[in-house]
Image (cartoon, rainbow, N blue to C red; front, side):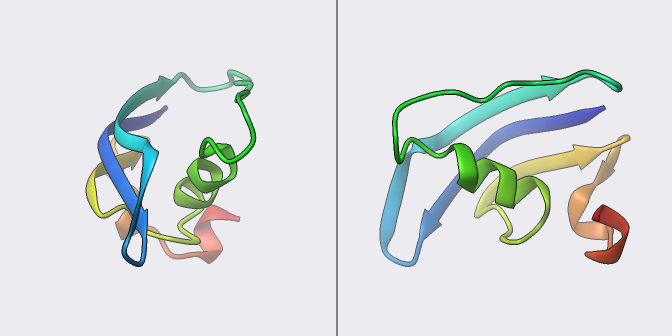
Amino acid sequence: MIQIENIHFQYAETQVSSLRNISLEIPDRECVLLCGESSCGKTTLCHLLSRFWDVDSGIVTLGGGNIKEYSMDALT
């Protein structure tokens, strides 16, 4: 299961308003569709899940463990 709890993320000095206080739970073996307007944060969220970037605050867990404890290779 992937759990996203109260995450915030911003690029440099610009707060990404669509990625403030985001919480989401994705059960194992489930497909999830992210949809929304252009520039609302869909790709950014995917990059945070793959640790291309790290969240500024909040936590992302994978299988109960903090995603920051996984190596980049383990997530590919």
